[in-house]
Each structure stands twice: as structure tokens, then as C-alpha cells.
Length: 296
Image 1 (cartoon, rainbow, N blue to C red):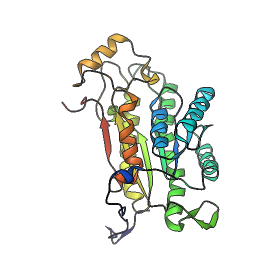
Image 2 (cartoon, helix red, strand yellow):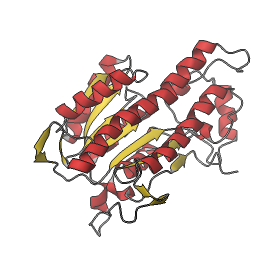
Image 3 (cartoon, rainbow, N blue to C red):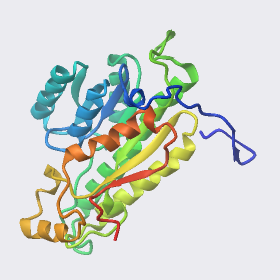
Image 4 (cartoon, rainbow, N blue to C red):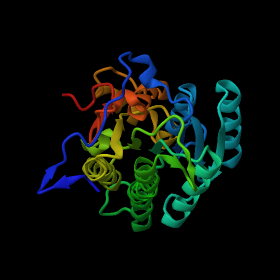
């Protein structure tokens, strides 16, 4: 819970990093990160690569695509010299999420520093008045409930580590490097800020708007032991937008000041910033990476 007394936040309940140089703040060496929705060909894989490049050991969660996820994890291990493994996890089940996080923490040096809640599915059912209710349920369960469940389970570890400063299930062993604060990052969307056209996707838009506000709320509740932020990508070249035809994508580009879709590599810096101590005074914020779509 937020450290408050008489309705006011307690002063100096957090600390700043001691480094006066910026590059060391971006290092994740010796830390553990979990990235959900990290199968091949999407934002999650790019995020896992970025965190591993910065030195983190990474647990990649996938839903159905086992072989591509395991192949990608093996490639990350080889490329960056860190530990990286893929795990099948149903983010719509809190029990499954909590059990997976506990198991990952045990296996990955007894700690959790970063959780990236990236799992999400698109709405392809057209106008909501005619759209299938089961698709609405799937979108909200994955995009919002899944993010909430991941946040709740991750926060258990963030809070304990801040209070105790020790390895999970071994109170005699201090965390090395020391634990400053946890970082929870949710993949939201510019669709949480604007209404997309020409495709109609009310439930997706609503789910992503809720994710942004959830992270802002958690930033207040978790002050003192973890930060909570979101990133709102615009149109990015990934498998989630494959259902849209070229005519639709042409309309998108007409509305993007930079005139094109983004690429996953163009998101990596934002995630690394929020994952690292470089963002130690950043919480409750949403970073739009949308080529300027939301600016006009």
C-alpha cells in the first residue's frame, strides 16, 4: 500500500540511484524480467531482446506458439549471454499467473525486478452492436484481466523484496544487486487515447484505456516498492494487425504524421527506459509511441 499518513504521502519514502552517469542506469545486469505475450513476431519478443541486451535474465511467456517461443528464447540466450526460457502461461487465470511467477522467480536467481504485461488480443468483430459477445469477453479477459492478474502477482514479490531485501524463500541471502524498486510495464495502446478509424473496435479501445488508468492507480498504491507505467504503441508492424487489408492500412498512414507504421525495434528504447533505474522517478505515466497519431 502507498505509504500515507493523515491523507498525505510520507516524505522521502523512496530513494534515487547513486550513479551520476546515465549509461549505468540502463543496465539490468543480474536482474530478472518476465515478459508476457512474448511469442515470435510481436512486441513482446522485441522487449525480451531489449531487456536481455541490457543484461537481464528473461522469462518469456507465450499462450499457444510453443516452438517459436522456445526457439526465440534459445536465440536470445546465445546472442546476449543471459538466461532466457519460454513458458506457457494462461494470463486469464490468476492462479496460473501467480504459480508461474513463483516458479520463474525460484528458477531465475530468486528475484523479480521487471514485469512487462504485453499479452493482448485484437477485436475483429466490427461494430459492437452486432459483434459477438464471446469475442468481447476474450478481449477484456486477456487485455485487462490478464494485466491486472500479472500486476497483482508481481507486486507480491516487489513488496517482499523491498521489505526484506532477500532472495525468495531464502531470507539468509541478500539480493545482489540490491533491490531499489520493481518496475511493472503494461502494453496499452494509442487506442486507449483515441477512437480508431476506419476499423471499429470499441471493446479493444475500452480495454486499453482501462490498462492505462490501472497503471496510474497502481503507481499510487505501490509508491515505495514499485513503479507502474504503460506504453501506448501506435500502428506497429506485427501479427496482431494482419487481419487488416492494405486499403485499411493506407487510411492509417493518411492519419499518421510520420506517414508509416512503426517497427518493433522503435519501441525497445521506451520499454528499456521504464524497466531500468533510468526511470527511477517515473511512475504513473503513459508513453505514446505512435508516429504522432494522437498529436493533431
